[in-house]
Image (cartoon, rainbow, N blue to C red; front, side):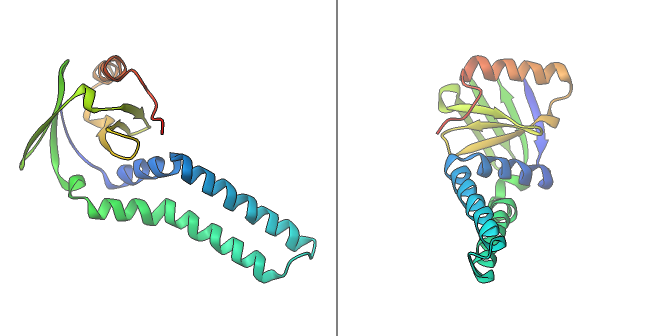
Length: 163
């Protein structure tokens, strides 16, 4: 099955957010910062800490949110030339072939470790930190989308990324 696609900036930023937020170490960091922020709010309300402490944890929470929601995905998007190219991608039983105006590259199915399906993309993971985004809107109809889901499940065996 051959598909042709370009990336939509909003959708890519959403996919990058999903990738970063789903990382276990970032999830733990977000939970810890949220707990400290809630704790500081309670302690501030009970007059156990000064307003400066509450403001510090609130500021930390806000910076963390901006970092993982805006700055990190945007910096990855801006640094990568990939998101500006036009692609053709061929999925077959032996490999995945990616073509651009600059050349082509083929990956055997065993080069991928897993895949993840999000609302707009299939994330084809090489390892827990490196992946390729395949837009779902590149598939012409629901039947071809179902076909690629079946192919990914049969070739990669793991529909989730594990660290």
